[in-house]
Length: 295
Image 1: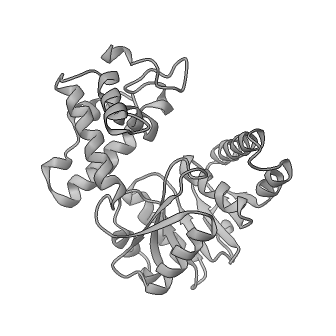
Image 2: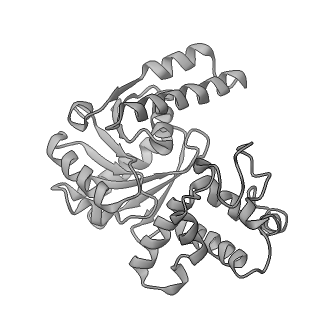
């Protein structure tokens, strides 16, 4: 099994493509936007250059990795003769259902369909296909080439064979797979997102400022990054989307997104990618300067 398709050339998609290509898999990177594909390939090249500079890989390794990736703007053209398709599109249940319906129609019968969703039900996604036993969750962590963890999520109908295959494949690309069951947020976000949300509530209620909250968690709990900085890194819109999925799924008020988070997303303050969130990134991508709203 050496042919893999990845749908979505954004942050997660290009990271997944990079990782598989580095382990000598032939990767078809698919996105409806040619500009997104170019940006994704530029990111992969930049990340490989960084690895060459740190002497983690050679120039020849870099060229080989890049030669293993081909780009496509249509799903139909990109998924032919692939054993596995990994969907890494925007975290939106309607969009994912549409993609999986199309994948089910155009992929070979034996092709396994995986989703990189960070919170949406695998069982719900699988239900739009005629192969629910071959649908599985592969939740990679960002940045994909560096982070070791992959949450492997078994949908209600996922077969043992597909589960074993996905776990083994994750090990072949030097990841550590952890098997989890299909409930909103899985394990990573079920624990992480309420912590981030509570940090935003703490700011919203005036208990402490942005830098103070992050400092307490970094120095007191040995977190490498404070929760508000981490929220900016993930994207506040992504955090809101995951919290909404969990709130809808559990109907438990503890998952209700903080009004400040909702307001910030509505105002377009999404974190690093928009230039401002809890910190100001206009001069540096490092969280060194607290945003004007909170300073």
